[in-house]
Image (tube, rainbow over all chains, first blue to last red; front, side):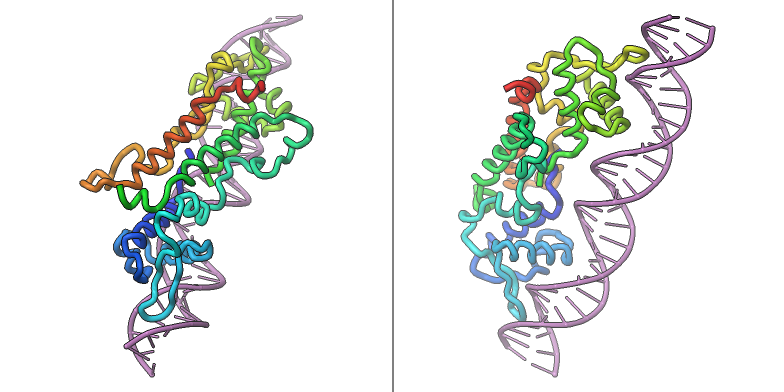
Length: 133
Length: 133
DNA sequence: TCAATTCCTATAGACTTGATAGGAATATAC
DNA sequence: GTATATTCCTATCAAGTCTATAGGAATTGA
């Protein structure tokens, strides 16, 4: 239950790798080999992380990827959301739907609370926390 | 991300329905009609809830289901775990695997913390909380 | 021009999820 | 004891998601 996709776990490992190599551009293939991630799969992951502004990609020879910010400024929530979208236990957490029809809808409040608990945990930790002590 | 399966949501709605009808046995079909849940699908859900000891099933005419305990004694975590198993963001939360090979494995500690945050939230709320104010 | 790299699109297999179907076992009422 | 209402069991199916691969276009530096 609440299992995290391989994609997200790969993304975190890749980001951690970049955190250990700040200042230089690391090619996707090098990260893949170093972290045992399927190379072509990782390519797509890095592209996605780039779209979300978490990493910067540089093409051509001597190209590669590097963090867009300092590790302590990148929250784990931002990585998770970049891969799988916003934390949303049930759809009505964002749009009330049937709940809006006059019912107090306690389940909805319950799910919103769960979302907030998860967001608080993930938002309160940074990439630095999982690369250093 | 971290979306809760329809099955689990159905289970909670069904449990809430039983909470509103304590003391009597409610047939699966009645719950299904009342809560707009696919009848045959709900049957399987109730069987599962029964296996976990959360509800009691009575066969034959005038049979049906009822809560095995008071709503305030049934945690939301127990319902979620009955449907989808224990909260386990990544597999190595329970068995260390590669992490055990001498590495400090900070990601693992991170995931364990997430599991604990979710468990604490779900474990701290009961069926009563989502049926009453 | 060449080589290394990101970037884009398409595809495929495996697995999971949501749902249905048919019937066997069991209990009650008449 | 027969009919009826119900849980219980097993099999199946369609659709979607997840993981992974393939091939090549665009870009950059030497």
